[in-house]
Image (cartoon, rainbow, N blue to C red; front, side, top):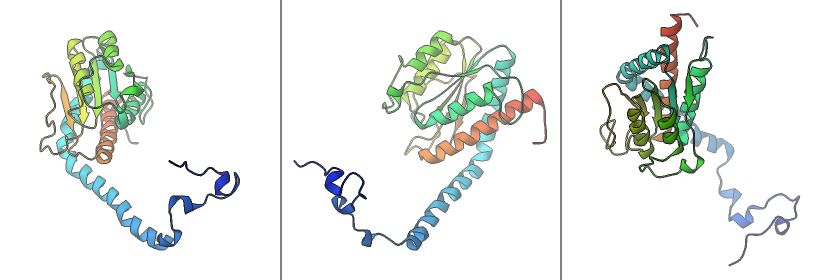
Length: 239
């Protein structure tokens, strides 16, 4: 089997890369104006879908988000700690929530006792199976205390690591707040999620299964959650 041509074989180390080796015909590519006209509707569709989903989900998600904010405030004011977790693309809202609570969201206030659980790079592409010995689960079992709150972000409700985290939280007499998307092909928010939810737990279901839409709603959820927490701690204010 032949090897791909190196830089010198394509005209030297300083030469411009030739598309010949890639079987690419520049003449077959659409001209810039045509390309823009093709891309603009597709790009706009992302904004339309995201806006429609936010509008449709607002009523159903408002109550559990409000309940979650109350649970976090009750935990913090009682001397507890908020533990936050997310893996894969769900790391982003988890990291942002941890920073907003321990630092600030939109208004200055003392930092709140919140910490993002350990993220193991080996788990980023791991299939959704039971992961009871994952670093984040071990950390929660060791450091979590009764009265603490777990906030877990996941793309799908049947994520095995999510189930292990919630189970660990229950073992430590903690409450769990889950922010998860919808399982593909399921007509219900929790789908086939195999995890016991305690009476004090809160499920914030994103009514969509596409990862991009779920991430957008999770980001909006954490913004609404942080604003509701600050409202209870600091009172109303014009921003």
